[in-house]
Amino acid sequence: MGWTEKILRKKMKKLKRNFYNQPTLKVAQDLLGKFLVKKIGKNILSGKIVETEAYVGPNDLASHASHGKTTRTAPMFGPPGYAYVYLVYGLNYCFNIVTEGKNYPAAVLIRAIEPAEGVASIIKNRNFNKKQNLKSKILNLKSLTNGPGKLCQALKIDKSLNNLDLTKNTLWFEDRGIKIKPSEIAATKRIGVDYAGKYKNKPWRFYLRGNPFVSKK
DNA sequence: TATTGGATCGCC
DNA sequence: GCGATCCAATAG
Image 1 (cartoon, rainbow, N blue to C red):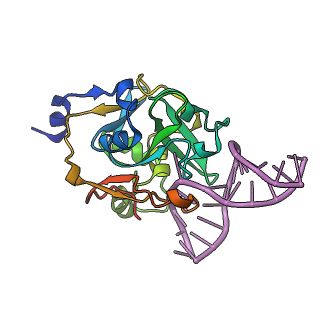
Image 2: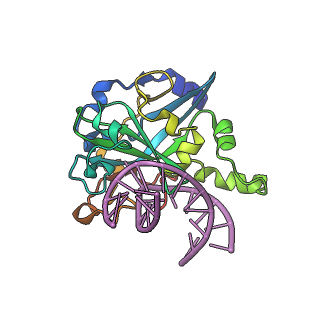
Image 3: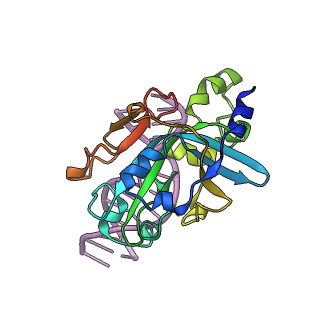
């Protein structure tokens, strides 16, 4: 039996809102091994989640929400299960899923996925420099989705999807029956938040130990 | 209204 | 290591 068939035979359960209405650190870890799925027309693009970061509550100085509710961060203050998408450094999008109850600002940043379905489209979306030859493209397969900005490019996630309901049929998360043991999960400090004072070293970045699609440190 | 700097990426 | 590139958040 082929790999694709095996996947198809497994349960593909779309995660419901109650999954996201849980403590953010739990959601961030439970999302590892789940699949992020994007529907573009008739095409399905997907990947296994291998790296996440938690942004937890109004006091987390690494979180955009630590300065209160603003136009940009409003989705984080909304109900769980919605997208929070923003532009960083003027060039790249970051994709988060809002967690916990309304008015408690928290979210999980998806930092890396391992491509599963629609790899040809993913390669196309990633817009590799045309000067690169096939060999470098193959070498670059690992760098298709190993970063928050890269996976947004790969799955065509941009600001038009901000505040999207992730329990519907455009962009969603699925449980395909993969079980992750606690020993498979590594926890480190979050990346790029050295400004966050006493929160900068919180071990709220989680990834699947040894997975080649994790973003480089 | 003006200034600042960032939950990144890719090339040098 | 460094430049790209834009806009939300602040300060004035």
